[in-house]
Amino acid sequence: QVQLVQSGAEVKKPGASVKVSCKASGYTFTGYYMHWVRQAPGQGLEWMGRINPNSGGTNYAQKFQGRVTMTRDTSISTAYMELSRLRSDDTAVYYCARDLGVVPAAINYMDVWGKGTTVTVSS
Amino acid sequence: EIVLTQSPATLSLSPGERATLSCRASQSVSSYLAWYQQKPGQAPRLLIYDASNRATGIPARFSGSGSGTDFTLTISSLEPEDFAVYYCQQRSNWPSWTFGQGTKVEIK
Image (cartoon, rainbow over all chains, first blue to last red; front, side, top):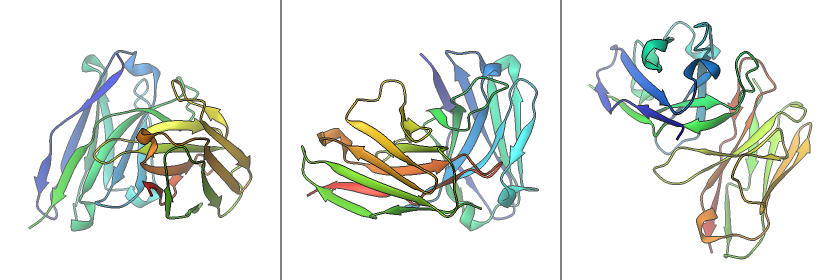
């Protein structure tokens, strides 16, 4: 079945970087945009950006421009999200989520989600 | 940035009752609004997209309506598994998709 399997929890110090992976299976990886959404403890959802796995093209939320990098490796159907210069308020669960639409026509709703990766930023 | 304001913050209802959740946008998003359900410790699940279209596998008791700035998610008769937090999300403002702060539907 269609699923997204994310990498395990991370603990990082302020100023460090973290790279989260998201392995897709059960569908054509290059056929759907991948979004990244985060959720701070007890808070709501925040869209970070998306990647077109076919072209590698990315779009980032303005808030994360300059700190986030989304990449992919099509040979292993895996998307990555790297966040740099971590701060304590980056502590959150980070989700990858597949777009509802088929490349190139992204719909920008998310119909398949990974289970999330907890990133804790603490000195 | 388009701000989505959900109300109420918490809705206390009994199984079998009707739930009506509201999402108001700070400017028009046309019909480009979705609803998600999230249970504790789980990822969100897409329920409704483009205001009124049920996602695959979503029961008919979930329905969405609205356009412009005012949207409603209705659960016609609450089942025990429907007690959760619900978020709205807009895709109108490129490339800055935003979510509401959520409405918790709890058992009364």
